[in-house]
Length: 331
Image (cartoon, rainbow, N blue to C red; front, side, top):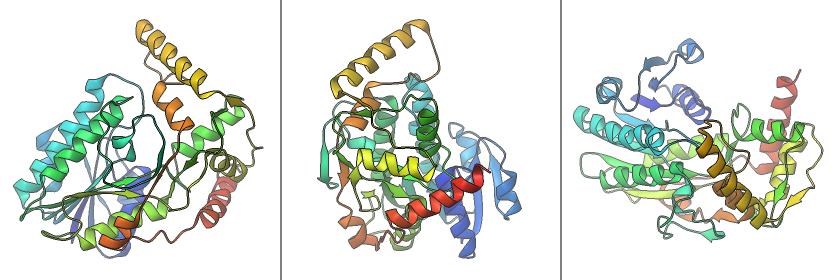
């Protein structure tokens, strides 16, 4: 099949592209920048902006399946900078699918669409969208997910996957950020270190998308629905962070900050940064403080049941692979 992956040069996107190529598919990537590493693998790379409907339509021409992975992530910036790629961009992807008769659209969402700053202990997809969002990313991703699920029908089958905290070899966000803060002496635990959180090893996250695509068709059990995705092995936040630190050869973090102090520090910093017009992300925000201080792990039985998702790479094996990759990266 001819397959389009938006954001094919990113961490998750590239992992999916490599698996699709291994299955013999004709793969196209759509990104804002050039990716010679993908071209070297035989991927057709199309450059453009998600907010440009003509560029998106051109990228999807001739494709049978679209994996919409690209988005603006993060917790800082003005609303428009998130709305354009995450909401308008997703609407452009849906329109392009309809224009070219694409039959399957697999959308990468996030568990943040349900997060309201309180514990989420073993919740499933019956949990509604948040009523109050703590960052623009979460709000715009919720709007995008809703649009994708509304688009499901007899001609275009859609599904949204919500992988949580993707990590592993090649990670350019979560793992490097934790290690950098540890090296700078700025890493602290927030609130209770026993709150459990889910995470997803990169191979499992990619596999979930491919399995969803295989099962997806009009009228399928998974069509028009959203699914939480994780390793299914929730760990206390302190243990997850310290295992990542250990993989990078760093000592464990032991310093704690009370959850309330972190939250109000985030609120103050957000206000100061806005008043000063600073574009860089504050060292703490309300969203990050709540994420670090609360439990968020999920019941993934629906994904197991409806499209056969199985997280084959365990946390232990994933950490071994991460340590090996980091050792090579630091040489």
